[in-house]
Amino acid sequence: MNLPTKIASVVLNGTGDVTTVSGNRADLEVDTAGTHTAIGVGYWDSFLLTAGAYIDGGFVHNIAGSILVPISGTLTTTATWVMTADGTLQQLNSSGASKLFSITIDTGVEATLSGRVVLEFIDGDGTITGNNTTNFLFFNSPGANNFYSFTGINSAMLNILLTTATTRSLNQGITLVDVDMNVRRGTLVLGGDINLGTGDLLPSSDFGDGGIDMNGHNLSCNDVLIGEDNDATMDFGTGEHTINSDIKKAAGYVSGTLTIELSTSTIHLGGTFDGTTITVTASAAARIAVGDNSVAPTLTNVTVNNPLDASGVLDGGSNDSNIRFMRKTIGKGLAA
Image (cartoon, rainbow, N blue to C red; front, side, top):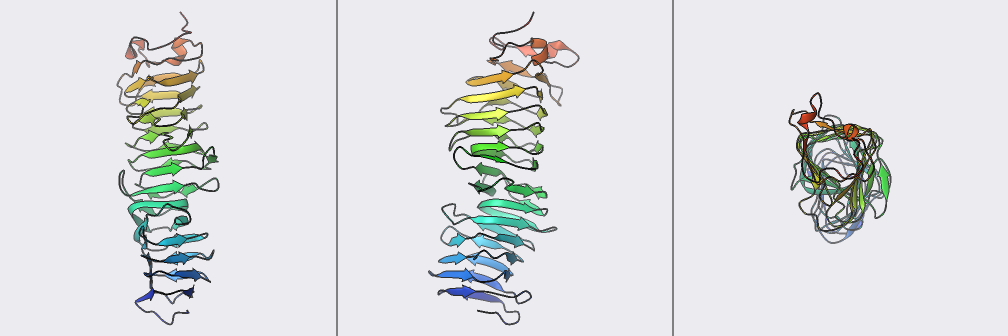
């Protein structure tokens, strides 16, 4: 079907191929059981899938408005969909092919999330509006590295579910506006700093073993909350990190080996490092220092597995009394 000049909307309720040409735009709605396959680049004012199936055929889709895929429709995408104008972004179905393969948020465009948006890749430098509970981005088994290449303003929580036993790396960091970032399976290796504002970092691994490797880059967040149902590792590496509140196991922790690797990092901690259930490794150059809030950090039940010089591991700034030791704070290997 080739569209003529501008019309209000096109509703597909049968089966067949779909194509448009640039400039001949309309709102596209697929609302009845049946399969429709794109046979060329898509140019639409909006896209709504409420029933049946839509296949993008490997062709880029340029959407000058909302992309709405409720749970009932089946969307198969292997190409990039580009939001070229403000609109709502919704993709609720996480099973099989029913997820967005790749989405670009163009410069100057604001994408307002509605519910969980399931996808593999995202880039662009527009604005993403979401929150920390109901409207967020869910990366489901991205098939390659650099799945997060977005450089704009993002206030949507990230849920990252990598393929089992997979390591994925990014060539950049991640900046979010006061929302959480959760790696729920597999290992994520950073290529730049993480800045979450008042959000928390959660290497939770609730769907399988995994964790976060800062890879020499810096972290700024509220809490680091580790673990849930499987083995989880937080590797601070060689960076300098600001954690405004606590480092501890997550409230939902059930089982699994929890490991924090301090390596040679410096952590400015504004709250408590609670090592209960956590194995901590470090080198003598690792430091736990006074947080940016000038509040002395508290350490409780932290056992460091390597022989260490306490003066290298703990740093209270200009006054060593800033560090408050609690019973069983430090394990073996303290130098006199």
